[in-house]
Length: 479
Image 1 (cartoon, one colour):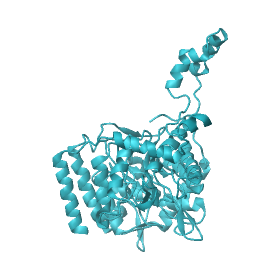
Image 2 (image 1 turned 90 degrees about the vertical axis):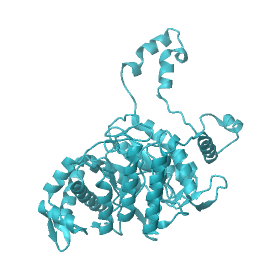
Image 3 (image 1 turned 60 degrees about the horizontal axis):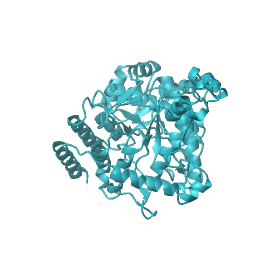
Image 4 (image 1 turned 120 degrees about the horizontal axis):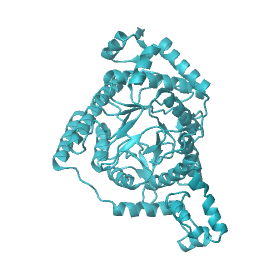
């Protein structure tokens, strides 16, 4: 990952952040959250929380203790041996998840996603330079629903060579089997508990509700050291106030409660501030993920996460468009760039469009290319003796052409100027000579080239056998 300028974009002033923090703490201390777990409720009460008519109320002191104990950085490991350091001043990316439909790579027609699609998409992810973490971007429709999340994560662990993200677990039984899969990977990845190899999303319900099953998911995953993304996803006007600042306050309160509960389950497991405050079409009550508020909310959430010293994971690379068109490019560009300029640690959404109902192989390549442009923007302009180039200008005035100077070659090779990998990098005549392909056609060719060159790295036989045993057990219990 390349370092960023760190002169972050701020939608919220320092006073705004303070007001949202103060309002969130009031919600937690005066209103509270519904927590359906007697054991955790009693432990939290022993530490100073109160139980008022079934709602656990959190005093500020308990929140501060939990935040102080949670790490503000995470180093992920991977099967390839590479490490991914999530920290301030750098940015990582991962896919969206649980998308049911995709456009077929050969026919271009919409169809249900399959397990083979997921496998091939992970192979593609392994080779995309700017996609930091592999995930289950599509939800295969040809596997038993009851164990779909187990199979998705097992597939990622089998094929993915990067750290994992973009997957969520929605019930405690599947979470138990996912924890078994994760622990089995100890035989493949060294130091898995020092350098976790994936994060998993967990979604409390809105407003401010931790049902028994979700708490069970938290216990199963957090207890074995898997970093979790607190995917708090209220919808403005439906499960949160209509105003953005009101929605941020409710979401933030739930995220703070999540951090306290996680720290109580396992103090050493990182929590990622996974803001997913959503915007809806008020005529249809459906969430839409292409409007500019998606980027604004992501950028504001980054500021809140930094205020608490928690790593941020926000949505951005998304669109409401359902096809590969200019709307897709415009919305993805805006909503991905804003949180990046705000200093997001992780940005989600690669491969997701149609308001998270559609995916495609080509869109993974699109988003990789768009992020490369955004990354160049976020790096800004470097001003030092070498880059000011006074001697180079003098050499040119003395007859040494810029193009022939070592300074030009050095900075061409180190990325002073962005060069697209898939998009056209020339003029109209070159475009005609290369077949007059549009961006979708270029992306399709890139997908096919990368898939043809990919080579799987199989898991050891004993790990594969254990995976099969775990999946079979899950199927017998849940199907």
